[in-house]
Image (cartoon, rainbow, N blue to C red):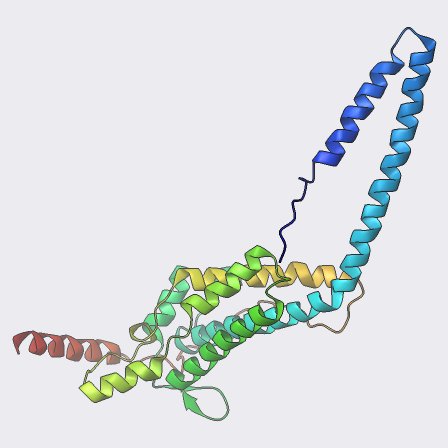
Length: 275
């Protein structure tokens, strides 16, 4: 593609201001003819400005209208992917921690809340999905779904996305794709008694969670913009609702269970050192 040089946006408005200032100075001249020339120049410059900037506005508005369907399509692709990510960690928190302390998506994806899930969630427990499957399979399924969808979003809409959004989606790809099942297979093959809490099998990469929050914020603003332009065939962003309190979270460890697993794993490590 041929590179073209573009003037900075402030050059033309700046030039108009300089010319207007010069024309105004002419109006202050003691000479009636020069003063009249200044007044005429101001009138001509103001008229030219109205025409130039008015046409520029109409062109920009027409281009925005032309790209509305593309922007709506990109919005839906980003929204559904963000919904999956937020829903996964909401379910994980409710099913393993069980309190309602987080009161927003930002708090739910905070370091403190994520660490609670990493410690509390037993990946061998059943997730409340159909068909029935343990959390280790469900977590892999949703994570892989997000990862592959993020790749498709960049393929489809990469050239139309804002840099911040493009970078956030790339972050999901770069830091995603971890497979619990692969680590579990290695553990079974090598008889490694790794504790089955989620934190033992998947990393909590802060950049990934920040990217999800960035995308969610973008969906809110984009939804408002598209709605204001009468685009109605789109869905609203995933709104946060109060978490369900569960006294006995179904995916949490039984009392003392995680400690027993941790002790067994430490003993295994000590035995390995002695070999």
